[in-house]
Length: 415
Picture 1 (cartoon, rainbow, N blue to C red):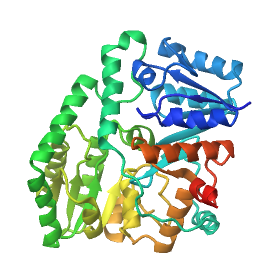
Picture 2: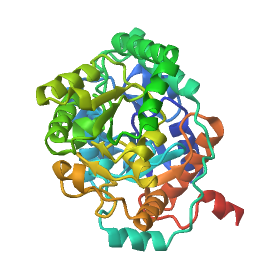
Picture 3: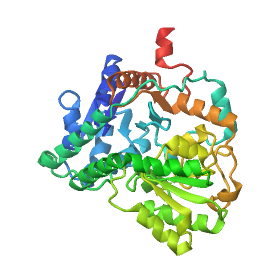
Picture 4: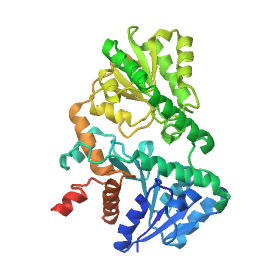
């Protein structure tokens, strides 16, 4: 009997819905709750609690895998503190590890792949292999099918974090597995930033629109979150400040003198650190104060399309740049950093030597990526979540995680 263990997932019923399909197919499932927030979204049948110290977690999970005949492990992101140790032990023990998160492709796709994402992804970086994968797959309708629920996402996140805060005594040795600031700091700061962005929306949007209308040539650098594991695990930087320092220095020395560098704030940034101040300080140090801009908003597709090129550490914004045919350079590790798609000759040469992505390869890449590593659906809106859970179980049952799917579950059932 195949036995799948679920660790932490999105604060939604997504994992429980996958489990229902697996149990109906004869699988055994176990959810291991690490904290009160986990318990809130799945308790009772098939759920157990780990209340030990984090230092004892590797010994516990290794013993559980061995004694309970575990064959599969599923979790949200492979680099959370408890997850990284569990993944390493699982892979060493021959288990199949399945990692998921928001999709590489947005807005209504979920990443669902083996072993790891981004720098840890097994997806090929060879253009010829990607072309061959795409040739075996049907065309994809890219029109969005689902709109995820921002309300349910925010509610789930708040419930998870506040329950850990006020009922943490149920799991007294738990230490949060992500790197976000403390809930009492992060939540009010995020709320305040979102509120002020909304209050000043017209001015924020107008500043970006004025730049676009001016036809002033610029390069776009969309920022990521300082605590994002994409930065922590799959980049050469300690944080966002380091990436800004690197990009500004390179821009000042190698970009054409008539161009601007535009930084766009991540929409969920709590602004606990002023990246605008970091930008201005670095620009002053290099004498390019008049050639940098910082935007808290703006229409992303328009900013990308009108730019001379996009610089990213490894944000999925890079995927959007490829889709829109804009030159792109990647500073960290990313599944889309492929010859023919992205600039391969370093940041210093990007400013004057960036080439437009190969449109045919972009199409093949997106098709292969969607067919192998993406599931159509969302985590929080009910219909999109239900269909995604069903296809996730389908791929697990048919041992098709990370392999090109010639047809989606919907098409297969319709046929």
